[in-house]
Image (cartoon, rainbow, N blue to C red):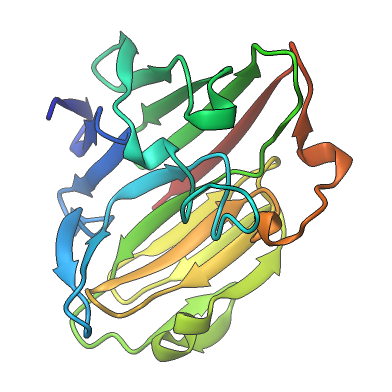
Length: 237
């Protein structure tokens, strides 16, 4: 598994080409994201948790499509297209099955106190493709941190197992150790979630939440032949 190391000042990011997964993000004050690892659920099943991954082409369940939870993007091996000390662009020339004509690029741009993630998709085929992506960050919380604040409202972490959706172009997540600010003009449906298998809370920017549970896509979810779209979100701390 090839891992790319990014630096900006004291901030470090580790990105794997396997799933284009941001495996860890940290600075001198510790982990910003819960480091990616394999955890065991109550039923004995193994779950990949931590870091941040793209949800492509769908965020959440695949509905009537053949897509797995959160799509194929996190399950495929990407290639490095460009890299500097603080930025990397990964590419996936083809998706799977009906998305074989979809090409994707994912860029992680690291600043000293922020990171910007940008997904660009292009339909190189002759049929329209449904796209409703998102990003899935796992923010590190302290041991026993039972409550967090989202946009000034206190939320019990145990209540996040059901996923709380909200709208907006920005979000503020206040934790015991630090405050996270997030912004996106493209991904404006936010999912707050945690299964409490580890010390993390997720606040995920998505295009339209669980869009693939709706049988009929809205026109804005359809990527026409030859069309490209870009989705970007920034996170500061």
